[in-house]
Image 1 (cartoon, rainbow over the protein chains, first blue to last red):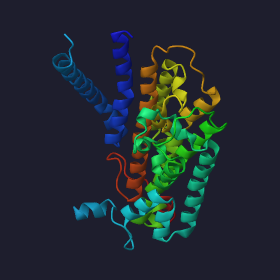
Image 2: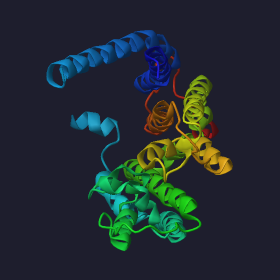
Image 3: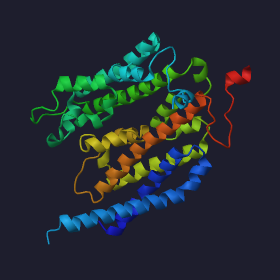
Length: 65
Length: 285
């Protein structure tokens, strides 16, 4: 599958993950909804960082070249 | 710490230990309520949970565990299934089927194996709810619990239809958002996987996660008749992930519904901007 389709599906699935996480951490709906943009940014950045680490490890330890 | 625990109602009443009551229920449905002295509910929980479990086990002939690929059949492989919520039932399955050492011999599945598998999973989920209830019952008085919609019922209704527990708690926006996101994610997953996610036989563990989405996933599975796979499915991995994550996130929604109800029962203010609503009993007095 195309890389961009993968990324689009990942961002799509990140929405319920982040929103449910926000609802679980905040009992007040307004506060939960207001925290979503920041939580979304943190989630996407963290996943990007993890991907970079995994790619680095793959290139360093698992490359056949 | 002790004061904090007391204010959260984590200590038992009448010298009864909530954690012991929960553990007993995990082993035998209703045993925790028997320990608390609530014989009627203990008998009710035992008959309902183990009745559903035995019906499911009889219909499936215990063959559900054979859906798991032989290379994945470890000693604790079934710990990640909904059946693990009913430990007594899970041990029964292990004893009756000899799992994980089941001989690999091709045979036809029993006619009702899928429905039987759903029922044994349902028994596990119901016992989790009984465990949650007995823990709360051990910490609170009947008067406290009458203040609001039962937190256990709210969690159970949220399993049945994502957001329903929140709706009945008066949190309409949250209910709508949870329903739309989780059912939407499941629908997208089913579309991407071309319906191949709707079979426990095909995807044992993904199905276990998806089971926690309740009626939307189970009704889709039953109504669709579990469509056969006739060729390669391009986005099957993404579809399975969407369906499974939707179910797992509903567990978070169930916990949220329970926590909100628990705070009401314990008389804590649940939302800073909204003081706790008075109960029917408080209004009448």
